[in-house]
Amino acid sequence: MLALNTVDFADVADIVSDTWALEDKEEQKRRLHRIEMVKFRRKRKAKQEDLRGECRRLEKHAQQVAASGSSRG
Image (cartoon, rainbow, N blue to C red; front, top):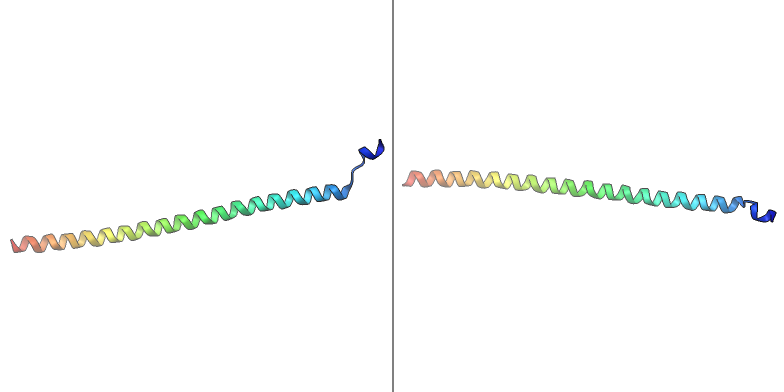
């Protein structure tokens, strides 16, 4: 009966080590996810800036075409 109440510290150490390893793995997953989200946001922002620049360029071109068209008529 006494054997059932004793604690094997090696088993406890293994359990704690496994738990820490699992927690580290979960933290690493969260960190990687955050990094991926930052990369995604940066790419999306850069794409939006590119599109804004393209819109400005097209608007200028449209104004130039409209101005040259009105001077002809």
